[in-house]
Length: 448
Figure: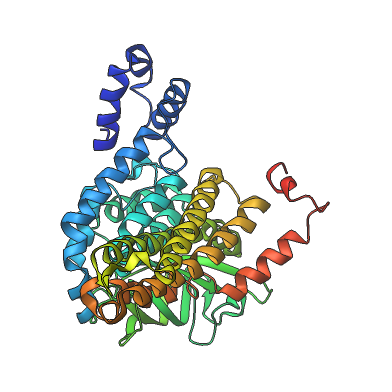
């Protein structure tokens, strides 16, 4: 049955005089109906702006923002202090149909698009970037990755439970000595005569690698070398109870993102059945590249949430706080902090939602997708950190303590310049892709 957003959308459609249209499409999938709704509303100009491209997105934002204010914001500071992943709250996202945001409806997902990805991550991150990072690792790095690259049997087995939160998933790519140089990974899977694989190696910096500091998450997508060629990598599903799979350590004392768990995971002669190979043997690099684009849109949107919250905090504080008999926002130095921050936030927001609108989640990335998914994260990650820094400066001593949140946002923001691609990696990737243009006209990125 259709989820709450689509039920509300039906009522809007009926009130808008689209009864015959709805009746003709009611037996189709949620994804198809959503596409048709978008077309119908665009004719009557009901769509509003790039940030809420359809009423479906508008309702989604309202729902997520309400949930954030009621449930996420009140717990953020305490779980940051204790470095605790709020599993119960995470599973409530499943009830809102957010854990399978982009997965197909038949597997329990909501079949929404990259614009929905951006807005959910922006809203969650405005209150608790650490909690949002755990959500991203599950909904994009595991659920979306499997929804795109898995076969029918794999999707039927894992996605329904992942979409409700019964399973908490993640993705394993980085290693203790391998980060940006991802194709240098050492974890290896050797194929046996019965078609199964034996997996050996160690993965590092894995979000959702542990849920409580003692146990691993429930299921992971693990990249491993399966040949001697430079791109001979394959993708495997590894379950929590697989013999030889264990938690190496939960990483503690992180600078930020403390409300999500980060772990080292160890694979010691883990036997992987043949039916848990995702895609084809040696084909994982394509899976990796397809998922990076939407991951970077999600990470850029997290920076937007950090920036937006920081602007709101410093705007209110500077209006209410007086110094030398005048509100702080009457002083040029403070005005510069606020105005520059707002302008940079809006520039990043426009860029992020434009990239999201053009991104087809179930097709191989185009050249423009690669350039701009790198570009939007390159710009927004540093922008979010800088805006949070200005908010601390505006609040002075109050910005340095947890009560006003901006010190936590500043700490959380730094990871976004590292995780999902370092600034230096984005610069390298973008320069390489731009050099491949057949002319010097950047507009041709969007017509190829």
